[in-house]
Image 1 (spheres, rainbow, N blue to C red):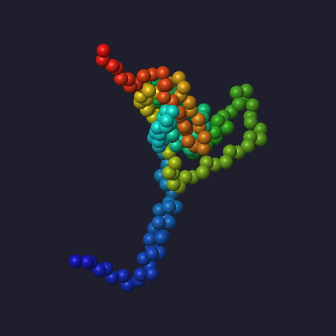
Image 2: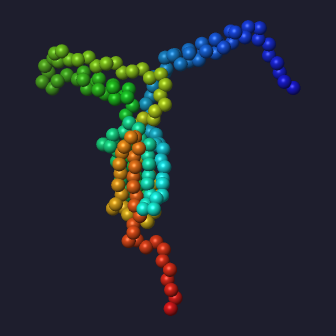
Image 3: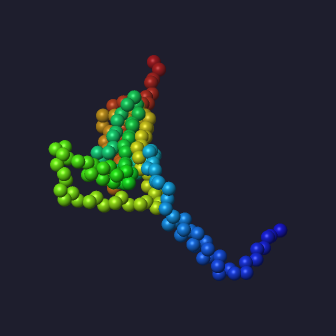
Length: 169
C-alpha cells in the first residue's frame, strides 16, 4: 500500500532544501586535518616487449618520487604536502629572525593561506609495492613522469629462459 503525503505549500519545500544545502556548504569547517597517506591508482599493461605500469600522480614533481627494486619487488613511494601545511611552513620560515639579530626591514607580508571548503584531492605520503615476475629485466627498467602519469617500463629479459621443451634420449 502506498503512503501519500500532503504538502499544502509545495513552493516552500525546494527553497528549504536549497537553503540547507547552501548552509552546509558555506559553514565554517572544523579545522581541516591534512591526510597523512593515500594510494594512487595504478594500471598494469602487458605489451609484446614487456609490462608497463602507469600510476596517476597529478601535481607531483619527479624529485618527490622514489623508485627502488628490492628483493624482487618494485617499490614506488613519494609525498605530496597539503597546500595549507606548505603555506604554514613558508609563513613560519619567513617570520624567523635573521641569524645576526638585525631586524627585518621591509619584510613582505605573506598572503594568508586559503580556507578549504571541500577537499577531494589526496595529500600525504604513499608507498606502492609491485612484485615483479622473473621474466623482467631489472637493469633495463625505465620511468618517465609526464602529464601527471608516472610510466614505468618493465621490459622482458630476452636472455632468460622461461619455457623450454626437453627431448628424451
